[in-house]
Image (tube, rainbow, N blue to C red; front, side):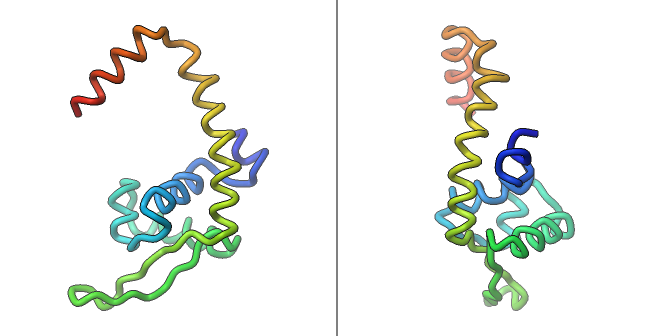
Length: 116
């Protein structure tokens, strides 16, 4: 895939960085799981690799209801990787999806998705 070839990051790892960035840079692991539709063990392995690469960091952030809560934060390096990979990702979407749609198709999709 182009993301891996150009940026050394898989789509699934890119999605984690994008979710963190969209959330303002940090979120609790349980919320990240919910947002990505992931199970904790699967996401944990991905976070291990992202942390090893210096793209995220995890910190204990105990909450009243959950003493084991952990917050994941995108690092400066993670933001840079996301930024560059996002350009490639958007080009891929354009090339593979948007070029097949007419302006009428896009308007219809916008209208339908706006209702959801």
